[in-house]
Length: 283
Image (tube, rainbow, N blue to C red):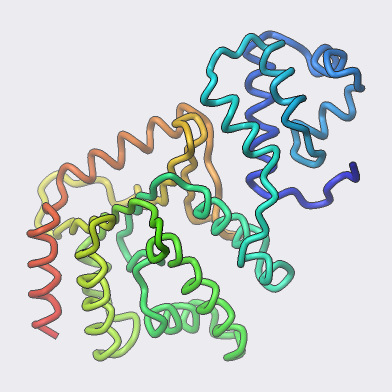
């Protein structure tokens, strides 16, 4: 099997999880390689995601590592055998690699949480809002490039619009609802869009109002994507080069607690809809 020059985040995650199991078993890479009848270099490539691994080998490694978590093993097998070529592949080479990894992560997510303070979450944005945002942040982009980014963002909405949608919860700060990224008509349309989507059974929108005492959570913006098992959850945060994927168990636990703390001070869904409706009428 040829070595991958640029593994996806999902392929890297599989390798990282196999490495975690090996390290928990107290084995060196060369010892694990011997169990598979291969060499240390090949084992290193598997754990880096630059080489594929068969379902049979995943199960053999899990058995040798004394992993008794059947659900985790089957989830890793599914990752190893996944051959999905989703819609995002048409943008490969046109947009940075992390922006291919994000929709792939979303495609496989069991649920999705967003916390946003300055912008409407991407899955809830209208094309006009996204266009104004991309054009402002990237003034050097020609119109065709802006349209490519807008198109990519709109296609990502499929996870909450398809026949089997992902359960989705968005915690949106009042600031994000009030900032006019586009013009007045765009702002009204955007709030209307959020209201429409919030009526869906699988979508929950909660507002974080300005008038909270003792709220220090404004730095906790995140995307949290649930995996098939909690150990395979992923947090995504903005970085200088695009999305940054976080999967260390201690960090996942920390961000789960942060989400619940912010959720606890947010308005209930019905009150949030009333809140957004009042803002829309004020415009």
